Length: 344
Image (tube, rainbow, N blue to C red):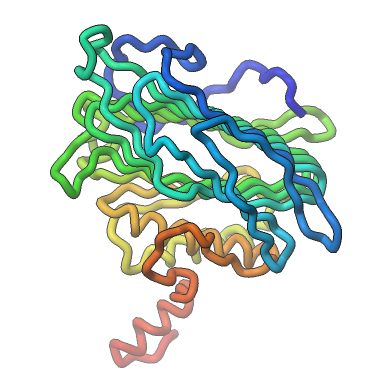
């Protein structure tokens, strides 16, 4: 399925700052190390998904975990402890027909400051991450890495390309912390840039599911239409294997919005032509993870799949999947009961 991408349509854009200094453009290596992972998943015996893979240091592949539903859970380990300007990570995965995988990371990824750190390159150098996922018929990938922490004055760019067969499903989520806010740090002259491209192969040709380009830096960090001073950004996208009926999609979105109850931050979700997208903006990476985990459980339920289990490498002290969120109707009934009224 790896064929050259056609010209992109007009993209969606959350917010941008001023032009980045000394930006050589995505794909031009700037002299750091280049870690890589290449994976292939396929159905094995008894309905379990098995994998083959290779890794180039500082990336490593720990032992995979087989879940009861046959899904292969594979954590990716980055042994360098973080990225500096000029470093690059490339991750590619192919999922054969009917295979199911969950990819995550062993720990949060850190990107260290670059601007103003070098006399040779005072404008800094970009750290980059390239992701490429190819899913054949009936394949199912959940890409759920731990959060990305962008240090003050860091420059980081990531690109994710997803190509789906007609009946394939992709769920991806990311949480980004802009500056170590607990230490009073901000992004300052740093930049976070992201490009997500998802397209699906239909009988009549390719259809774009989503093209999403974001850049957070400068004025966009304080602007109300950007981050409004918040330190954490999150995004979740589900490209569904088939269109959801109108009432089913409306109920799913209503329940996902109800799952925001008790969580700090601003959260919104809406439909795609075949799936949904959710955004988080706020002070808490924990709140973003909790909301996305609840949406993940909702999506599994809508698809009639086994309820998810948290990846074993995640450092949750809480149990968000056991804190079963109430549906909108249940929340309404609870509110009326607490107020001493009968629900209409």
